Image (tube, rainbow, N blue to C red; front, side, top):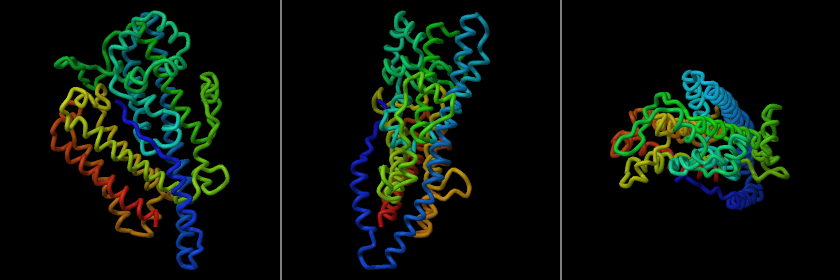
Length: 397
């Protein structure tokens, strides 16, 4: 039930080739040629901070938090084996999960590229969980022995998406109550005593989760530090690619992008996609739920952080459009030179979407027919529309 998007790179390249033909300056209009050259220069300036300060920095922080979370779960397993109290470690692990989760949600405007090409998005962020398969797994002595021996490698290669990733860890970290036959989260740290099999399973899940986060950093940066490199090598993960360079070096040999306009359009397309997902699926499905399947389409049901996730998704749009650091060159700067009113409309729409989302209380239990959810859906849809119809059109001129 994971949201799935297909990014049509071939279509992008075809569009880029057409753009290259259009922008080659052969129309005899020197003023137009200069304007288009200025566009390429401004969008080129925006790509390096976008890649380094928005994408790579986000994935690096996510990977670092993943390693911290893994360390805490290893400590929990050791405490289970020794009969020691690990309640504080569970609290710390919940905090680390939230921190890692925040960076992931703030990356969802750039789910194109490695996250899509290598299926990392569904690998680590599928929901809802398959509880029947999970119970079967936990009671299978051979599979549990394999997980303990092989760790994240076994989880990553052998388990289905509904048995791993953020939400499998979330289920054990946060308390839930059975209401009308359903597990409803409270957001509080889990107070139960873990069975050893559950602790082993959690170490494997989080090791795989951390590995996938490191893989995202590596695929965009073209390399990671020694510790992370050793982790990838041990897990036999890696694609020897540098997706960031494709954007920074648009138009050069080996790049996937013919022009910087192509690269900028990819960035905005990623923003459009996540806005549509937040409005139509993440909020839309629970709001309009008429079936158990739609009712259970709650992104973070046990930690009760769904609206935090949604707001961070919109912040990923802000970082992609405006830049993650003050002073970063950005796509926003180019749009402002062409249509200052449109740039301000985009900024306002981003802010209004975040405010509307954060006004929702208890989304996990109150999403159905909630007027505040409808307001948030409308605001996010408005943001999606302005990005898709107006920003994309201006970039294509």
